[in-house]
Image (cartoon, rainbow, N blue to C red):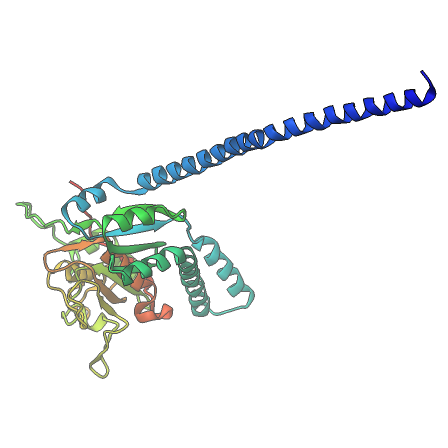
Length: 357
């Protein structure tokens, strides 16, 4: 074969080889979309599976946040008042300690340091509540416009809310990651006093009740400590402010002028919402007497701290009943009576216990 024939044959073989390769590439390209589609399908299925699992886990976690007693209440009533507890907690101990250190460094007076500390704590409580509740608040405001939420109230004394709405709203709130629990607004009732046949013990001191003597209060008075300069807060059924043993000690009463201002010294947190301090049950007046009571002339000392002043929040109604939402509102008011942190009491007294049966 001559040289020209060899070149022609080599060229034919190259063309044939190229054709074979091209054909293989075309055949492979036909299968590639299918392989790619199958791969995408598998990835999509995995992604959908993860989303489905995530939704399932969210629903499961949300269900675990809902209290069973609350769910039973929704079987009876369409709209129920319930409490929402949020995850985030204000580190009030740290805030108080930091404020104390700052006050010491700034050489503030004792009263200035106390006010600084209280202000810092209340500010932190409010900040934590405002920030962590923001998404749920926005949701509730929208649902309120649509008529699905009747009412809601935010608290900062604990990071929580009281919401009056239907079951669907409670379930939706439970899906928010920042929400820890959804609880019933439990009803509380004062225990009724029972009379016994036992004789009342007698005091060995004149004008001092036996129980006051028994706890050693007169010995403390003898050291010059009788509660003077302090304010005691009562969370109870209210107080009869003009009771002879309590009137002079009511912070809202000015004995020099005879004027009374209840704004910063009394709150009626019950449905009655009355302005002037009162007690239509009697329990609150009794225990306030045990705290600070005595006659204006110093006789008949029934209280352990007769030199102290008192303020009060009425949280129990005439029947001796209340709810957790009312108790929270009353306790929060004590942090800053009438909005003033500087008028918060030094001590808050709760002389009651709830019978859980």
